[in-house]
Length: 418
Image (cartoon, rainbow, N blue to C red; front, side, top):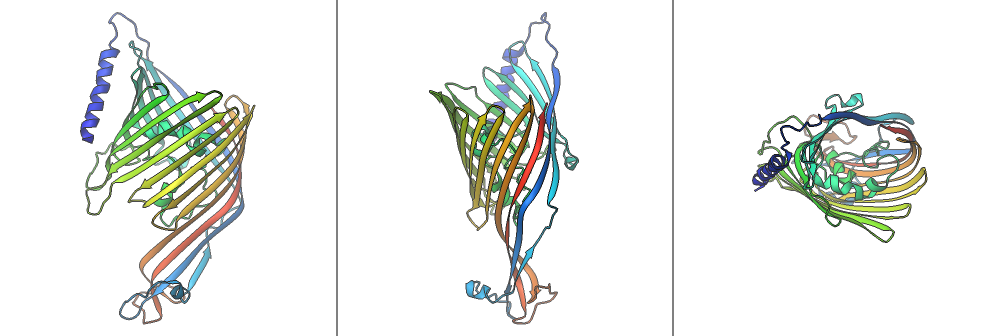
């Protein structure tokens, strides 16, 4: 069914171009043009407080290899080691920069074509220097987008979603690394990190309708769920595949109050392996604007066998006064199968210095906890690793890691948008 949908969408797009894009032979067409824009942001940050702890608990076995019952009484008898890790400098400097190449053309039918490539501006992206890239066809029928970019749910709902819609300084989803996140299971915290239904910038085809009375819908087909652009066909035996993104939104005004919101879903078929489960996620988002103030919220729930199951709440408030703007944003995410949690809050101030230039200051508080278990490693009572099965009462074969990171950072920067 999903393959038929992809083929049907491609045929509709081709029909639109053929029916509306044929120009008269004697009419001179404008040549497509290309322009360059982008941004450069320089940031300086200082750590005001930083606590990173990992507690190891070792579970003992007897000569027969029988593990004891793990309860509070037992854990009180085993050795625990608490380590403060990852000591860093108090100050740091960072850069975020991109160069955008935008090609544009207008057909005789009025259909507008937009092509875009986003070149990363930092050296650490040297393995994949191109971020998003796509070709867009827009007209009275809506918009068709083909390429390596986010799906319809991200494009339609980000402007309604909590911190994305209200933050005036750093981005709470991507700029929270000043205080390292507890990451025994890094994939889990990708689920908890931001309130967008994102599968990355892999190849997709999307359709977004025009707005009719404030209503809009969008759908995306993604043959291979992979955040890359290597043009490889999906291996259904190993990869998640045939993903569908869908979204619906509404926006309007009631007197002096602007409002908007929407709902999005994302599904993907699991790899054809025993025990593999399909990916499912959904999000609801809403925004209110009254005078210089804005309030926005989002709730996301994910059922992802690669990152377990969890939910996230994203809230934000913004106030603007001339060239000055203020925001308070926060998120809390929690996994349903474990005790893992991630909470972060950011207070920001920004001032426009001129067209395309602003300075900002941010206080970021970040707290996370994670748990994990390493199986099969044998330890002596002092925590040292053993090569052989220990005697009864002298060794431990399982290690539980409880990680708790928290802290606060003060970050300021200047951003120039071209």
